[in-house]
Image 1 (cartoon, rainbow, N blue to C red):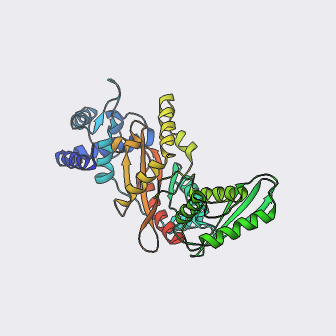
Image 2: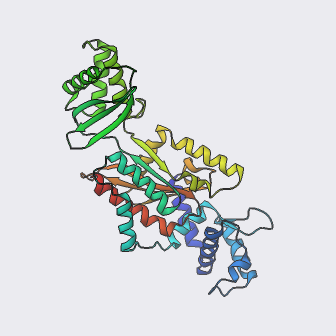
Length: 360
């Protein structure tokens, strides 16, 4: 179902609800978010300020079920919200909290990594989101588009070398790669000199294309060792050489915390398939496309997005921008449908702003 269809259904459902129905729906969802279990009419009737009998609440819950906002997993059980019910709650009934100054400072301190590379900053951001929200933190990192200024290979130990990539915008990237055993230091120096002479002023993508063309057309006399270093050095930074041109890296932390929220074997299998999908390059591009569709936080509940169909999971996603106000990546949180949206939405939103400042 398209987003437009969902919006139409949501608007129709909201218009059909009385204040009593909205209140009962809100109470059911809030109780579900706390317990993760079906909610019965007696539970709602015991809440402060409800003022309705269990029989009256059952009638309202039955009406909400008829319009597709609640469902009963078993004949004798209480009710659970549908994806549409959760969407109505998040869009129309949820009161999103505001971050305190202490919480803002905590997010900034967790994300800050003085002198660190962009990759390290984003790794820290993903880990921080997981720690703050107690769900899985997700970051789609952009590719670096700045031209290269200098390339150097440094011998670390037998079979290992450090690739130092210096970009014209001042960013320095360090990558450890595997090299043939017994390779002399002079060969590493020659490889660095060759690349610096040929590829300075080009982006990583342009550099890789240029050297590939050189190799294929035999326009340069390069020995086997240098060819190997070229291949490894450029591919390590840019991915596996097979990624879509507009994708970068996908960083996910806190997956164990997401798995803690599901207990049934079938739920674990669904979440396992979810993370397999998240690791594909196509998914990275899709997530970035989703972030570019809107400026603010976006929430995807259950089957609203094909990625989360039948997983029982939702995602809160927010884009971050570079200094030119261009969306270059996105961050988010993946958790169960009953995650604490009111608390997590402002955290994701503010963290995206912090990331934009750090990497802008």
